[in-house]
Image (cartoon, rainbow, N blue to C red):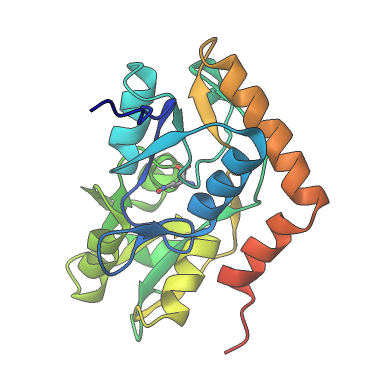
Length: 231
Ligand code: GLN
């Protein structure tokens, strides 16, 4: 008996928990804006892939080590990352905010003096937190995933965390007992990444597919499904 099952053309890494962009549902399957966008784009452009859920930092490391072909994980297009990666056209605008536990006495950055701030390794939020650490005199504790980071703030071990606005506000709407107390700090739009100089064909397909799903309304449908759904 001969089987003709074809191996997936590409391996694309994503984050383990970053709702509404990627999150696991019952049965272990992944869903979210990134997951649906990638699926719709691959369908338009006729490519196949295998999804690999890793911590955000591991996903980025594996991409730079050439162990995966691409990353879609609510990843900001930043000048620092553009040294190592090629990015697609931006597909979503986001910024970094600070969140604290509900009822916290921390009302602004000045209140962080001597306190501990939770950051997610390798993220734009972590880079921002680190950049203002000495000015506001706080300690830093690193986490590999968003949920563990939120939990450390929730239980009071850390006084605040830095997270992307759409992700933090979605989490809060869905029951995470934190509050956002800062304005959005611009961190660049989200883009799909490949290693610099590698996988130009995949990047081209992603951009073409993105343009196509924007034009036919699929893109907006996906965004609405996760962010503007009527309850
Ligand atoms: N948008 C942030 C970044 O690019 C965080 C991404 C994530 O945690 N998945 O660093």
